[in-house]
Image 1 (cartoon, rainbow, N blue to C red):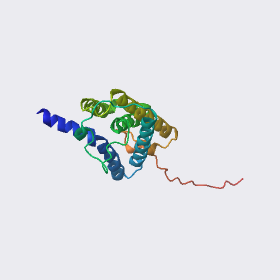
Image 2: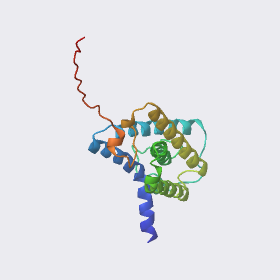
Image 3: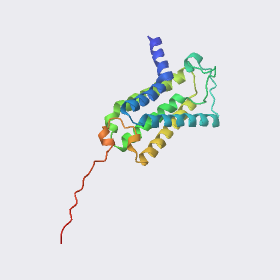
Image 4: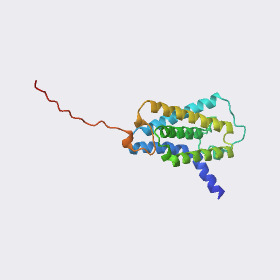
Length: 193
């Protein structure tokens, strides 16, 4: 039984961030909007920022990681491109990318399930990264903080740009988000004096 839970946990750790990216991308395609593209641009920026922070700050994992669990997918035998876990950074980014607009537009109470689900993904990923010694505790926390900070700043920038059609707000009706200009006709009469 524990082997099945471990397998599910490994799938969440390895593929969870990819599922998030694909969810936002497919939602954007189905809804015919740019929200998913804006999200992906933020995720790419977060990953680049996380990799740079990881290279700048010398935090090392002195434990021997479980290679099959920590790095199930490799590209040209390159095991890891970052000293920080990108999964935690993506989860942190996603959490704040979603929650900042929810809090701003007062939809937070309608999306408790979304917040709880993302929190569970973060916790499961956190504990599996620790259990398999993929990264050190400090590396995981720093990665989560970097992603969360970048997600919060990115959301605030989007909110301040007043482009509501680029912001993902779960639970909001599309009519509340986008206002199409209505055609107006004016009738003018000349008054005789």
